[in-house]
Length: 76
Image (cartoon, rainbow, N blue to C red):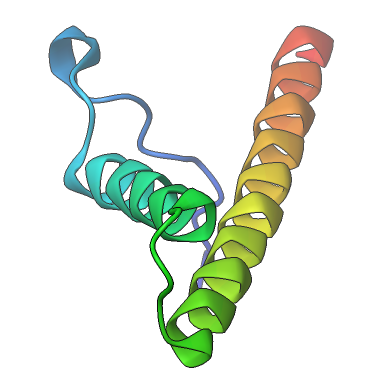
């Protein structure tokens, strides 16, 4: 069975996908909670910090994959 390694690519017209909008919304929400001057329960702040960390790692992995694909396309 042949495995597919090609990516789907960007949506038409450069529109952002639902995944990207959710990711951006979570990033903004976690930054808002972390920077909030209001005293929030510690568990909420800890969850927001871990969410921000996870989103940062996800972004780094995705940019690494994009860079690798770009280098592979240039070699072809």
